Image (cartoon, rainbow, N blue to C red; front, side, top):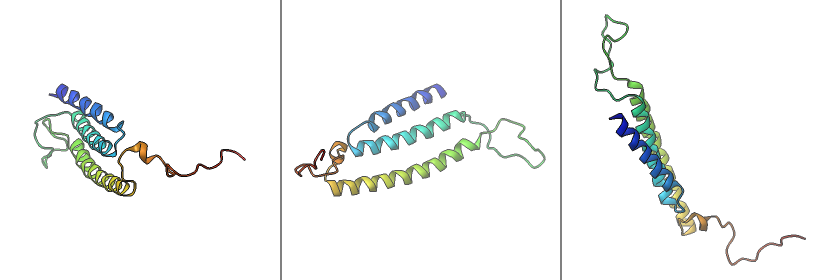
Length: 125
């Protein structure tokens, strides 16, 4: 199971990097979202997937007597989900505002800081 999830993490990273290298902002945003999901799955896989007992220690023991699930990767993933969702929402609003101002989502067209038909400034004096 861990091998299949490791391959899936690789597929997520590959697809996310492919989308991040795109010229269109919406594809880049989808790449960021997929990259976040890939990182979450990587943390989950690194925490070892086990179907053991919950991490509850009885009162008379100081350490668990049987193998238990590790709660740290689960807590990290829940925190990362909240942060990545808020980051994605911010980027989505930022992209929407840029599209409204520039009438394009192509990054090559967004790079132009001056109008295309404007007179160019002198190169030297």
